[in-house]
Length: 237
Length: 237
Image (cartoon, rainbow over all chains, first blue to last red; front, side, top):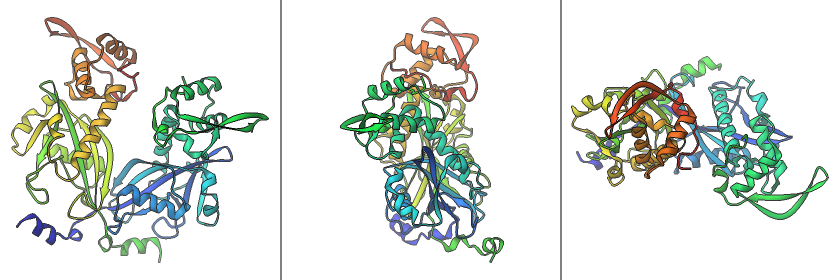
């Protein structure tokens, strides 16, 4: 038998295979709080529980894992998040009662403003404050996934400006600092934050200003798509 | 219908699901070179090509993904690598001719000495220098996986002593420095390397010595399992 014959005769369904899903921990920043998008499950198993947005990877998808995840997120939010990164793959015999399953989990960030309208129209999808999410009985192992995504986001907030993706396209330095503080969970020194950000040269001054506590603050945007991923020196130091 | 009925009636095989495998990029250090373990495929598809050690995740595995990976690696090397970390999950419709497939890829490190004997007895398994592996027509998308694992390892070599896991339990600082240099691909300053490692306080002086270019060099071991993961300041600076 040659390889062509082998492929022609191969029947995937004759073999045991785990269930495969993709799930996203989608973060945003709203009302001075870090929030996570959750979906109330309308079907068994775990019916009625809050869960991460996501779904099954089926053979009909004609592109890769990340494209599948983005499509599922777009169904819920109406938009494509500007930041999507693979987080970790969770798998085992007991995370889903339907059988051995794996989920490829992603972290995604989006500005609240850019998906407000489409999310408000759906009743089973909601932004919940991260601090509350941790106390909910989430479906499956989704609480583990949320916690791992948050840990990773804290690291990003210490060493990069990836958190800027939860803000609109232009933002002030005090706004960015507050996002970092909310994620890290403690205040940062204003002077040292500003210096680190400037040294890293990741932002462009748009020339526009916005009143911030009465005083005009410069509006910045990210230099380019990749800039936010660049390492900067630990912001806590 | 309640959840119990739903689970009882659920037939996984009625649904399309991707093929699921785990694969490892196992690195070691031997003859002053970074090497990767490859297995020659004895079956279709991609018969005769070199591939990463790994295999299908089947429903009969009664523990998680990492345990499955470790079991598959042990079948090839006879031992359990001291360092195993999930790298990335690759998936899509065209990476395996048998159909939509995903592989959860891991990076693993092992000292050459600890698996020398069992690997020498198997003819279809071999340690190949990383520089040569990059030029082979590897099976599936395994070359992408190897390259991604190497990129990640370079980052680890810059910011941690994770590379020490390719050395035997005790080693000298010049040995460790050489491993870092081989991985990073350029020489490091001896004085600054020694200072960074000492500052990070990750090693324990065993009190023993070994002749290193004629002079006795102190033998160290890692402080504890987790120490190697700790960040140290960029070794290049």
